[in-house]
Length: 505
Image (cartoon, rainbow, N blue to C red; front, side, top):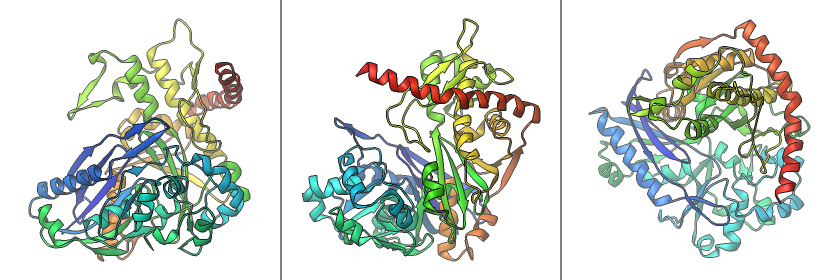
């Protein structure tokens, strides 16, 4: 009997099938496009994406042969939601977290509740990146959908609902709406009413790992699946990523090297607002019961992709690996051995904590006629690491951190992971399974089905580690000198930005 983990993101979905030992039996992937438009519209076609989810389930199941699927769970992006009826009719597209519709209600929300009070209840400050502003916009500007909808569902629960489960939402994804009371584990009805959104339209709240039904027989037949796999409530993708690389307790964080670089720090007791809010840190339920997480993130792989697309225009500069372009190793070959002579401000697009800047521009300094393409590329990688290291160094004492488990596409590059270890001065350990989100979802499925007694047993059974990159003391000192320069100069980038944007208006 196998476990199926589905990982659904902004640009694509994947389904991975694992056996009892955590060996990958099959993988299927579909990529999709966002629906964009004037006025900052950013959506996913809900029907089309759900068809892609069905396709990856069908393909993964078929490629595994006769191995029956015991249980299914889903790791998904936060914030985005889908309006549906009690008859599973999809009423419209899914509005993404960075869609700007509803931003005009931020002042109104702030008048209803302060950041400090919202943090005490929900664990987050008021922000446009959460689902609430879009839910309010739907209620006020798309009243036909709002009135007809029985449920506004986050993606993990929505997928399970469309496969035959009951309408539910796990605690981590509920947190991304701002309407969740994470202490009492209920929807904050009074807050919803005060901003004009009826929380009765939100689905049932359940803990990650709860069985929410079995696959509908007609769906199972359509997807070529024998029997009726259990459907198990999943989690926010970053929480599933952490579980999928064994990050359950304080002291070790997940470092995800994807489009964005995201650090997930787990802890057992919530620090107060006075400690977290000045640092731009939130609190969210981990997939693991009795644990919380906070996120530190900024651009990562997306900056390297920009560099590749802008400066590596010749095909000979790109190496084809397994049918896809590996953008890492050839770039690494061109980079200098030690720290780059180029210093970069990595704010090429909206930033993460602590400031969450929206009006941004990146900067590259230290250029001379001797500067090489490799110098600039390495300066970019270093800047991403410096940005995140500054946040890590500023973590409150309540969140100790000694090392990292590293996952994601960038972790395939030994040189890049070693650079991170040298910059942070902490060990980075790679896992055998790079698709940590899908593996985390499979562990969740195993807990729900009874395969594992709890999440710790599931992680111990399925998560395996390959190699650990220890920091080199001499390189760490060299990077630390550049890091101190970065911290001195970065505020000046901000001053330049303010003047630049003023001049451009």
